[in-house]
Amino acid sequence: MNRRSFLAAIAGTPALALLLAACGDDESTASQLSYEPNPDEVVVRIGYEGGFVPAGTAFVNLPALLISGDGRAFTPGAVPAIFPGPLIMPMFVRSITPEGLGKVLQLAKDAGLIGPAPDYSLPDDVAITDASDTVVVLSVNGQRYEHRANALGIESSEGGPSTPARANLLKFVNLLGGDLAAIVGGTNLGTDELFVADQYRFQAMVVDPTQWVEPSPTIVEWPDDVGVVLAESLQCATVAGADAEVLFAGATQLTFFEEGDEVYQLSVAGVLPGDAVC
Image (tube, rainbow, N blue to C red; front, side):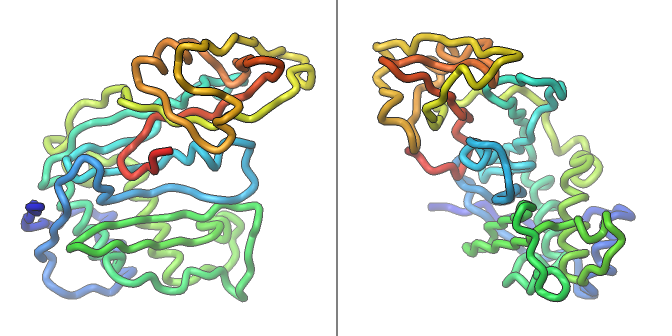
């Protein structure tokens, strides 16, 4: 399979200068970086895993940022802080040019992230089990690099000590989690559009609807003609995008589905690049 190679140019921003100071990289800021230009290739992914989260959250596991090899940048959409929220959390997608993706990868290189992960342990080997891990994945030059740090940023918010490696990773995550256009240049990004997936994956969990009093759930009968049985979907199942539009239109976190004598609560997400197919 052919690779798209490009000369990754440095983004001249004050924020990038902070990263350069953090990682101490005095080398030339132009370097040859390559990635697979496939729609299913995850070139950059920033997400969160683990910790104490509501049932189904770990299954959905939406990224804070995902950039695919065919030049698409995915980010979560904002939703009102009310309960119940939508059953399917919105994701937005926009195009990113090779030059724009090159600037992101150069930023990662300048931060020292295109290489083996350093020790991201908390000081004194403390582990905060109820906090999530920040996970940064980069696929560059035929190699996959994963940087994982538990409770990243908690020590900073509490004024406690950190480590240079954790501080460096946090700067990178915060930069890309902010204004992406400021990093890559507005001309290198397309217009945000609501992502409509070709497939949706979901996990079903048997629930007792009487445990929800106010607001009370809405119970909808699961149709027989979908070709998916909820009793067989306790781990993972998929439905086509066209079916999902009908099944989940207007559904909220308190929309439950009835099949036979059981009632199920679903965790649903559109299939993104890199997601495992059930």
